[in-house]
Length: 219
Ligand code: DX5
Ligand code: ZN
Picture 1 (cartoon, rainbow, N blue to C red):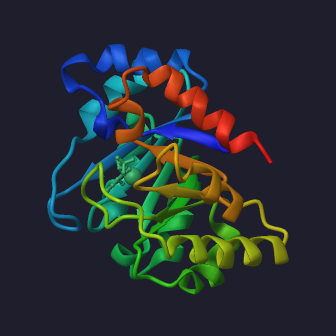
Picture 2: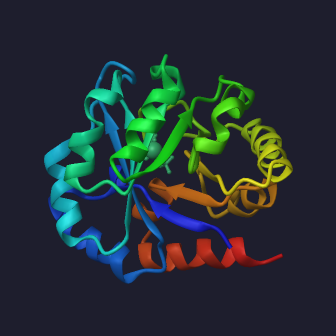
């Protein structure tokens, strides 16, 4: 069974409290929070005050995905705002090992996000220091995009390496997850599914989260 992380990027920002409560009361496991700076990605989302506000009501893990340049300058601020897991992009981190040490020293789980064009082998040397690989299955910046199919091969390659070394690193898939592809993604080796549009555009988001849990638990 996969962990499910609804992406707040697709929530109704005028009713954020209601959407946070919905996730609290659902079978979802984490809140996925997308931070965009308009430089690393061509979009701007929300920042520290919104993460802090969500933290006050959230009863589940806050999984914060930084799509920003120089993320090390903000790691402490996001920890103070309430991040439990902090993911930085490998493409934004020339000193990734240092970023991972910083995140751990601040008491958070460390995630590395990786764009569709970046080979997973670039993570192998630091994999033992990575709690979560946030594997992008769309080009980051926007919700509601189509799943990029070759991500499935990247999941299999990464899973094989994690298993070979008996690591506990989780594979999280971010972008384009639907009720139709959730099972094949889980079968490829994903442990966590982010779902924005699929959850928040549904007529019944709570039931959709339950359905994602059900689909990913079946053999
Ligand atoms: C994309 C973000 C995703 C996004 C996923 O840049 O990192 O987390 O919210 O949205 P969906 O599930 O709609 O593709
Ligand atoms: Zn994300």
